[in-house]
Image (cartoon, rainbow, N blue to C red; front, side):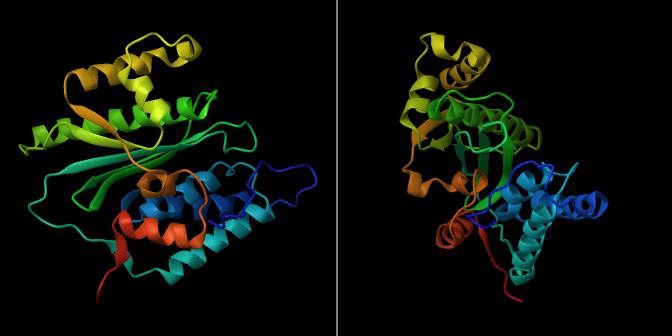
Length: 242
């Protein structure tokens, strides 16, 4: 997505676009984003928010994305055998939605250097701070990590624990590790208990990572071309040789 794109709900004066055509395009892109192209997950999830009332500008953003896919049609994921190390990156964009100022959570789970789970999701509650938005994203990643660990156990596969979740906000990490009741975050208190239980059971570990090395950044907001390309490579998306 163009880093300068400004996406918001249609205004009365905006020129509308055919919703059926728009929804068909978004549906096809969602299928691609879910299975083989995590690099387009944020853009597709964002554009899907305007399915009910798309404008011509929204359609232009769809075409921008289609041109990107056309130019990277030979890109994909390469998996290697014999790898059982799982790492997780979680991030959030605080108040990024221009319509309701809700934040966006993003996470990616890697086995070795290849992604196996990823998501970009608009948060259901309005975060009051960057740390709170990051904490909500951490909780989402922790729950997906627990599901994945159980899946591996059912398959008879061993996964090294604790599974490390990398986060670039020190305050959010402190919120997870400190059992003190935070009065300012009562509305998300349930999540505190879940992450504390996972930490105490040594099933997950949360570590700090500098923002420039936060791989989940690609799932939370539009990035400049160079930053996007660098992160795309680091999350395991590359050109597949013929």
